Length: 326
Image 1 (cartoon, rainbow, N blue to C red):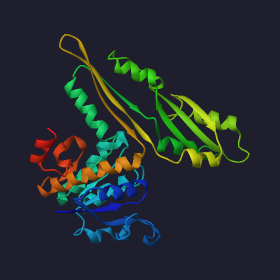
Image 2 (cartoon, rainbow, N blue to C red):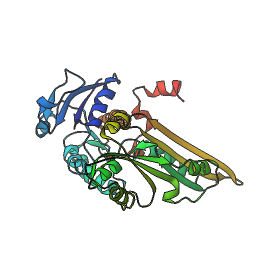
Image 3 (tube, rainbow, N blue to C red):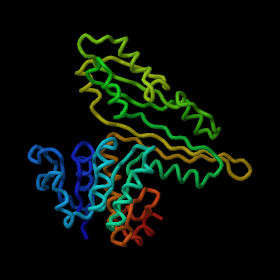
Image 4 (cartoon, one colour):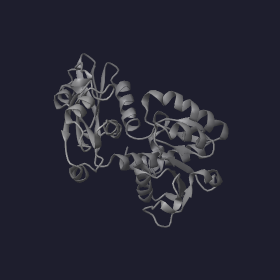
C-alpha cells in the first residue's frame, strides 16, 4: 500500500521532504500546504497541488501522514498540537529544553483523536539522541560527549544578522580537534564549553558600520558567543553568496567508558552532511513510515525516537531485515 503524505510548510525543510518522498517507492506526495499564496509556491514536482494552510482540515481523509516543516520557535508550538488532532504527524521540533512540555501538548491532542504524532525527529534531536541512549545503556560507567560541526548554524547565524550594522552573515560551529582526540582516546576528559567548540563568523557590514563595534557585540553576545573562542571575518556580499550559500553540518556522539576490570571502550556515531535540511528531511520521511504503521496498529498518541522500533523505519519486511541486515 502507498502511504499518502502531505507537507505543511514549504521552506528548505519542505523542499527536502518533497525530494525524499520521491526516493521512497512506498510513498506518494499528495499535497503541500503553505501560508503563502499557492500560486506563488513553485514545487519541484509539477503534478502535486499546493493548498492554503487554512484549508488543511478539509484533507483529513486523503492524507495518511502529515510532515510538519515549520520552525520550532514560532510555528510548531502552535501547529504541532493543532494538527496532531487531525492527522498522523511527524515534526522536527528541536528546542531541547522545551521538548517535555511540547510532548505533553501534542500527546493531549493526538491520543484522544486516535492519531500518532512523532515529535523531535531529525539528527539532533533524533539520531544523535538514540546514540546517546545506546551509549549510556551499553557503557553504564562513562561519559557522553556531543560535538557539532563543522557546520553552518542557522540559529547563531540569525543572531549575528540581528546585530546593528550587519547586512548579512553566517556562523560555523567547529569542533576542537584536540578535544575530540582526547575523548576518542578513552581518557574521559572534563571539557569546558570553550574547549569543545570554536565559532567562526563571516560578516557583511552595512555601509558606514563600525567594524570594531560589530565584532565586540558579536564576541560578547550572551548565550551565543561569550563562552566560546569566536573569530569574526568581514567579507563582501558577493563572497557571502559565492562561498557561504550551502548548509553543511554534522558532528559526533561519543560514549567513552570502562568495562570489567577497567578496560577502556569507546562508541562513536558521526555524520558529515552537505545539506542539513535535506538530511533532516530524509529522517522525517523514514519516521513518517513508522507513524503510519503504528497508527495502523492502533498505537496512538505522541512518540519520540526512543519509542520507535528500528524495523518500523524501513520499507523492508521483518523477514527481509532478518535475512539482509541482521
